[in-house]
Length: 103
Length: 299
Image 1 (tube, chains in turn red, purple):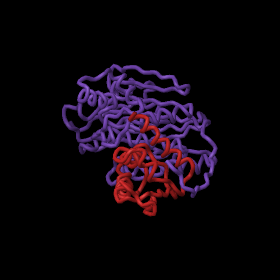
Image 2: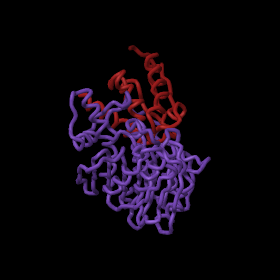
Image 3: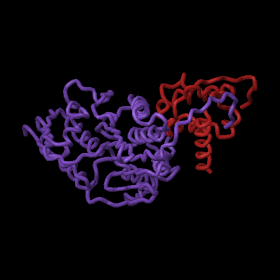
Image 4: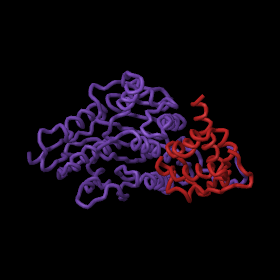
């Protein structure tokens, strides 16, 4: 899936979701990220004011992206912005964990 | 029958309490009573796990149209329940899914689990204990524990009775105790059903519960489950040198503050799952304000 490096979309997590606790809350974020990737965009995911993410939320958002696009695509096309270091670490650790589990 | 009476004894040991719950469930009665009388006159002891499982027991009757009455007696345990507002919970018009402040400053109210209220409970509980007791401490472990427990109920329990959560701080013991109860399938039973379906046979209930803690093991109750929830809970508890108690089906499981585990089969199964997390507040980290980073972070 070729991308134009100038095709970048900023997705604000807390604008997409009502919370970050349950898997059902994650669906709208997953759909938005998925569509952006399918359309050839790179994503800057803004975590401004983002509340802590549960494992269920991560499963239904990043986990689903992992299953459908793979870790290399996520690393290539999604970056985080406006984050606290602990938030970035949580998402990175989650992706590393599920990556190890599939090997 | 017109009225069914349950005499509640607050057993300090888990198993007699399990027996009391089982012996008095709505489904074991030969006929539907018009009213349920919860007799608390001899209730000599009460712990957070009694509160939530008693709430589930009563909820089962209420769901079946039985009027709930209390014989409160005069003892410290019933005074405590009174201050929690417990006796109002099944009155007509009372919304158990909403936040109702109680008179016990060290507790955060008894709430009926509902997916609509998860975020509210998680963040309000953290905010409450931050404001009143731990203004300089990071209460994220409380937040994370509640979140994982709630999702466990929503994703796996299939409980016909709405479960309950209750959080109590014990300052002298340096503990915040979170107790969640549901009358669902139970963790070992859910896991064994999955194993029988996918592998052709199950394992012992203790082995099944232990499998639930294994990172990456999932019964796929929802499409996105990846088997991280119980492992997350156990990690939080271990990091904080705290305790985790799970009573699910006939399994008694306790992870102690030093990480050691006690597991046993009870003679009788609990009708679902009860989880008690006792967070040691001496191991709460200082609250650090993190700066927002704007530079792009590559995953």
